[in-house]
Image (cartoon, rainbow, N blue to C red; front, side, top):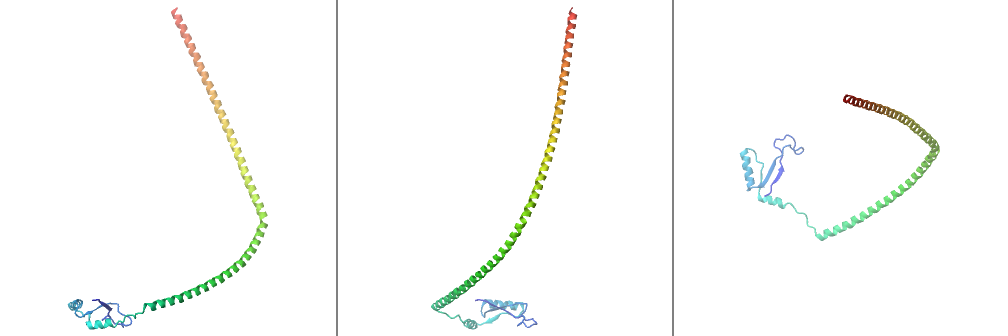
Length: 220
Protein backbone atom coordinates (compact mmCIF):
# COMPACT_ATOMS: atom_id res chain seq x y z
CA UNK A 1 0.00 0.00 0.00
CA UNK A 2 1.31 3.52 -0.85
CA UNK A 3 2.13 6.17 1.78
CA UNK A 4 0.83 9.74 1.57
CA UNK A 5 2.81 12.42 3.46
CA UNK A 6 1.45 15.83 4.41
CA UNK A 7 3.08 18.81 6.06
CA UNK A 8 1.71 19.04 9.54
CA UNK A 9 1.13 22.37 11.30
CA UNK A 10 3.46 22.72 14.31
CA UNK A 11 1.89 22.19 17.71
CA UNK A 12 4.02 24.77 19.54
CA UNK A 13 4.05 27.57 16.95
CA UNK A 14 3.01 31.03 18.20
CA UNK A 15 2.21 32.62 14.84
CA UNK A 16 -0.59 32.25 12.36
CA UNK A 17 0.77 29.27 10.44
CA UNK A 18 -1.88 29.57 7.75
CA UNK A 19 0.03 32.72 6.64
CA UNK A 20 3.65 32.09 7.66
CA UNK A 21 3.91 28.36 8.17
CA UNK A 22 6.28 26.83 10.68
CA UNK A 23 10.03 26.19 10.40
CA UNK A 24 9.48 22.66 11.70
CA UNK A 25 8.15 19.97 9.36
CA UNK A 26 6.49 16.79 10.48
CA UNK A 27 5.55 13.78 8.41
CA UNK A 28 2.01 12.50 8.73
CA UNK A 29 1.61 8.86 7.81
CA UNK A 30 -1.74 7.99 6.20
CA UNK A 31 -2.33 4.25 6.11
CA UNK A 32 -5.00 1.64 6.54
CA UNK A 33 -6.30 0.66 9.94
CA UNK A 34 -5.09 -2.92 9.97
CA UNK A 35 -1.79 -2.59 8.11
CA UNK A 36 1.57 -3.43 9.62
CA UNK A 37 2.82 0.14 9.14
CA UNK A 38 -0.09 1.53 11.17
CA UNK A 39 0.49 -0.87 14.03
CA UNK A 40 4.24 -0.28 13.99
CA UNK A 41 3.84 3.50 13.96
CA UNK A 42 1.32 3.46 16.79
CA UNK A 43 3.54 1.19 18.86
CA UNK A 44 6.55 3.44 18.27
CA UNK A 45 4.63 6.58 19.31
CA UNK A 46 3.40 4.92 22.48
CA UNK A 47 6.91 3.77 23.39
CA UNK A 48 8.28 7.32 22.94
CA UNK A 49 5.50 8.88 25.00
CA UNK A 50 4.42 11.35 22.33
CA UNK A 51 1.17 11.96 20.59
CA UNK A 52 0.80 9.83 17.47
CA UNK A 53 0.94 11.57 14.08
CA UNK A 54 -0.66 8.62 12.36
CA UNK A 55 -4.10 9.18 10.82
CA UNK A 56 -6.04 5.96 10.46
CA UNK A 57 -8.42 5.67 7.54
CA UNK A 58 -10.81 2.85 6.88
CA UNK A 59 -10.71 0.90 3.62
CA UNK A 60 -14.12 2.30 2.64
CA UNK A 61 -12.84 5.86 3.10
CA UNK A 62 -9.74 5.16 0.99
CA UNK A 63 -11.91 3.60 -1.74
CA UNK A 64 -14.22 6.63 -1.68
CA UNK A 65 -11.23 9.00 -1.96
CA UNK A 66 -9.89 7.08 -4.95
CA UNK A 67 -13.27 7.03 -6.69
CA UNK A 68 -13.68 10.80 -6.20
CA UNK A 69 -10.72 11.43 -8.55
CA UNK A 70 -12.27 11.67 -12.04
CA UNK A 71 -10.10 10.56 -15.01
CA UNK A 72 -9.73 12.95 -17.95
CA UNK A 73 -12.46 12.59 -20.56
CA UNK A 74 -11.62 10.36 -23.49
CA UNK A 75 -11.58 12.06 -26.89
CA UNK A 76 -11.86 10.03 -30.11
CA UNK A 77 -8.60 9.74 -32.05
CA UNK A 78 -10.22 10.85 -35.29
CA UNK A 79 -11.48 14.03 -33.70
CA UNK A 80 -8.02 14.79 -32.29
CA UNK A 81 -6.38 14.15 -35.66
CA UNK A 82 -8.88 16.41 -37.46
CA UNK A 83 -8.36 19.10 -34.85
CA UNK A 84 -4.57 18.83 -35.20
CA UNK A 85 -4.80 19.10 -39.01
CA UNK A 86 -7.00 22.19 -38.78
CA UNK A 87 -4.63 23.76 -36.29
CA UNK A 88 -1.63 22.91 -38.49
CA UNK A 89 -3.23 24.54 -41.55
CA UNK A 90 -4.03 27.65 -39.56
CA UNK A 91 -0.48 27.81 -38.13
CA UNK A 92 1.01 27.26 -41.59
CA UNK A 93 -1.09 30.06 -43.10
CA UNK A 94 -0.18 32.41 -40.24
CA UNK A 95 3.50 31.47 -40.59
CA UNK A 96 3.47 32.17 -44.34
CA UNK A 97 1.73 35.49 -43.81
CA UNK A 98 4.24 36.46 -41.13
CA UNK A 99 7.11 35.40 -43.41
CA UNK A 100 5.70 37.54 -46.24
CA UNK A 101 5.48 40.57 -43.95
CA UNK A 102 9.04 40.02 -42.77
CA UNK A 103 10.33 39.74 -46.35
CA UNK A 104 8.50 42.93 -47.34
CA UNK A 105 9.97 44.81 -44.36
CA UNK A 106 13.43 43.45 -45.20
CA UNK A 107 13.13 44.60 -48.84
CA UNK A 108 12.04 48.06 -47.72
CA UNK A 109 14.91 48.24 -45.24
CA UNK A 110 17.41 47.27 -47.95
CA UNK A 111 16.08 49.95 -50.29
CA UNK A 112 16.54 52.57 -47.59
CA UNK A 113 20.04 51.32 -46.83
CA UNK A 114 21.01 51.41 -50.53
CA UNK A 115 19.74 54.99 -50.85
CA UNK A 116 21.61 55.97 -47.70
CA UNK A 117 24.79 54.31 -48.94
CA UNK A 118 24.54 56.14 -52.27
CA UNK A 119 24.22 59.47 -50.45
CA UNK A 120 27.14 58.62 -48.21
CA UNK A 121 29.21 57.54 -51.22
CA UNK A 122 28.65 60.90 -52.90
CA UNK A 123 29.70 62.70 -49.73
CA UNK A 124 32.75 60.48 -49.36
CA UNK A 125 33.70 61.04 -53.01
CA UNK A 126 33.58 64.81 -52.58
CA UNK A 127 35.73 64.59 -49.46
CA UNK A 128 38.17 62.32 -51.25
CA UNK A 129 38.43 64.73 -54.16
CA UNK A 130 39.29 67.57 -51.80
CA UNK A 131 41.86 65.41 -50.07
CA UNK A 132 43.42 64.42 -53.40
CA UNK A 133 43.73 68.06 -54.44
CA UNK A 134 45.46 68.87 -51.16
CA UNK A 135 47.74 65.87 -51.61
CA UNK A 136 48.68 66.92 -55.13
CA UNK A 137 49.49 70.43 -53.88
CA UNK A 138 51.70 69.06 -51.15
CA UNK A 139 53.31 66.38 -53.29
CA UNK A 140 55.96 68.69 -54.84
CA UNK A 141 57.03 70.00 -51.46
CA UNK A 142 57.17 66.48 -50.08
CA UNK A 143 59.26 65.37 -53.05
CA UNK A 144 61.72 68.22 -52.52
CA UNK A 145 62.00 67.45 -48.84
CA UNK A 146 62.53 63.77 -49.56
CA UNK A 147 65.21 64.61 -52.12
CA UNK A 148 67.01 66.84 -49.64
CA UNK A 149 66.88 64.14 -46.97
CA UNK A 150 68.12 61.53 -49.43
CA UNK A 151 70.93 63.82 -50.61
CA UNK A 152 71.99 64.40 -47.02
CA UNK A 153 72.02 60.66 -46.33
CA UNK A 154 74.07 60.01 -49.47
CA UNK A 155 76.62 62.67 -48.52
CA UNK A 156 76.89 61.28 -45.02
CA UNK A 157 77.44 57.76 -46.32
CA UNK A 158 80.01 58.98 -48.87
CA UNK A 159 81.96 60.93 -46.23
CA UNK A 160 81.93 57.93 -43.93
CA UNK A 161 83.22 55.67 -46.69
CA UNK A 162 86.00 58.12 -47.58
CA UNK A 163 87.10 58.34 -43.96
CA UNK A 164 87.10 54.56 -43.71
CA UNK A 165 89.21 54.29 -46.87
CA UNK A 166 91.74 56.78 -45.51
CA UNK A 167 91.91 54.92 -42.24
CA UNK A 168 92.36 51.57 -43.98
CA UNK A 169 95.10 53.06 -46.22
CA UNK A 170 97.02 54.47 -43.27
CA UNK A 171 96.70 51.20 -41.41
CA UNK A 172 97.96 49.25 -44.43
CA UNK A 173 100.93 51.60 -44.85
CA UNK A 174 101.85 51.24 -41.19
CA UNK A 175 101.58 47.47 -41.46
CA UNK A 176 103.79 47.40 -44.56
CA UNK A 177 106.43 49.54 -42.87
CA UNK A 178 106.39 47.27 -39.88
CA UNK A 179 106.80 44.20 -42.07
CA UNK A 180 109.67 45.84 -44.01
CA UNK A 181 111.44 46.63 -40.75
CA UNK A 182 110.99 43.08 -39.52
CA UNK A 183 112.39 41.73 -42.79
CA UNK A 184 115.41 44.06 -42.60
CA UNK A 185 116.13 43.02 -39.03
CA UNK A 186 115.81 39.36 -39.97
CA UNK A 187 118.19 39.85 -42.93
CA UNK A 188 120.81 41.60 -40.81
CA UNK A 189 120.59 38.91 -38.15
CA UNK A 190 121.06 36.25 -40.82
CA UNK A 191 124.12 38.01 -42.23
CA UNK A 192 125.64 38.32 -38.76
CA UNK A 193 125.07 34.64 -38.12
CA UNK A 194 126.72 33.76 -41.44
CA UNK A 195 129.75 35.91 -40.59
CA UNK A 196 130.08 34.29 -37.18
CA UNK A 197 129.89 30.84 -38.75
CA UNK A 198 132.57 31.77 -41.28
CA UNK A 199 134.86 33.12 -38.58
CA UNK A 200 134.43 29.97 -36.53
CA UNK A 201 135.22 27.83 -39.58
CA UNK A 202 138.39 29.87 -40.33
CA UNK A 203 139.56 29.60 -36.75
CA UNK A 204 138.96 25.87 -36.79
CA UNK A 205 140.93 25.49 -40.02
CA UNK A 206 143.83 27.51 -38.59
CA UNK A 207 143.84 25.40 -35.46
CA UNK A 208 143.92 22.19 -37.46
CA UNK A 209 146.78 23.51 -39.66
CA UNK A 210 148.84 24.48 -36.59
CA UNK A 211 148.27 21.06 -35.08
CA UNK A 212 149.44 19.36 -38.28
CA UNK A 213 152.57 21.49 -38.38
CA UNK A 214 153.39 20.65 -34.78
CA UNK A 215 153.00 16.93 -35.47
CA UNK A 216 155.36 17.18 -38.48
CA UNK A 217 157.94 19.07 -36.44
CA UNK A 218 157.87 16.47 -33.68
CA UNK A 219 158.49 13.64 -36.15
CA UNK A 220 161.54 15.33 -37.60
